[in-house]
Image 1 (tube, rainbow, N blue to C red):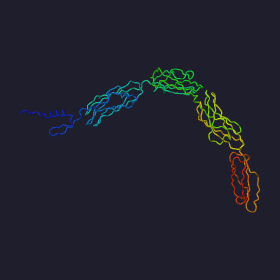
Image 2: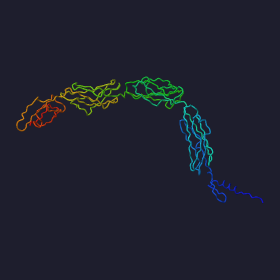
Image 3: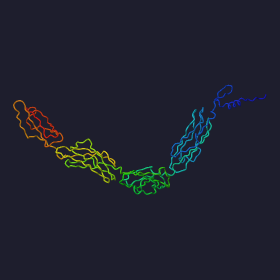
Length: 456
């Protein structure tokens, strides 16, 4: 009898291929479940095929993506497959390995670390490939190329900034040319004045020339001269330009604007000192005001008396004016004070003058002055009107006796006289006489004071 062929396995395989998009199929009449190994159509690849990175950028992030979410984990290997950069030359570091996307994940990243060296070299590349995908297929960008851009080419040479400035009375000025890194050879660059509002020969002296930065150095200073004048004027400019570099490349700051700051409008006004001593009997006193430099215009100084001090106007002094004019070309002026000489015995007195505003100059940091008027009369002397006094105490009751203190001259202030009972006294306070104040006040302007002692 002829043996019959069993076609069931072949039929089952055909059905599975046709229905592979389904989540399971059935095996034999026992209906056992057979999981599908991966989802049809999922691909794995880099998100881009190439990119560039500066050598100074230490870390580069590389992204690997799935075309869609997968119902199962997806894995893929990665490694460097070529390029001109090498790990042996310390161009970069990168570790080959395997990425695993968990079910539902669609993006993972790799890190490549660039080593920044000081060698001048061509741009270099690193080629990375994806291989051996599991439960997916390789997509469009299975290879990725990174170009490492060398940053060790010729240095940039330029001014340290786009603008600088200086006061015109500071004769010697300088501006700075610099390169962005030390270099192994000398670097040259020409510089010249190309414009500005200042006039050569009148406002400044500048020689065009060539700057040289020695190998290993990073800067060169250009010096030039400013001319000071006596005229108040607007600030003026000098425009200086770099050109024709040798051994370097011109940077962004190849033009410098130097501003000459007019110092006439910046002259400072101050008192010559913080304290002036005047004598009451000198009649007129002078207070000196200083200007920091000569200017062509007149300078007017306005001043006033502060509401403090012990001297009073018009009793002790007078200020005939509240303004002082310092003529153009001069550097000082004097405020006049009229002093009132009286015959009062008094302490030295003071008052304060403040500069409140000024024209054609700037108020300095010493605008307040103290003036002390020294008294020439001396302090008054206090004494009893008699050398000794005899009092008859009587036999009954008590009596009083007046005692007078006299001044050698009047004082402008109250005078306190302190009395003391001599230890040689035989009379006893409280038994022979009543206690009395031992401090007596002689009022300002008075020549005497009388008080009573009660005799018991």
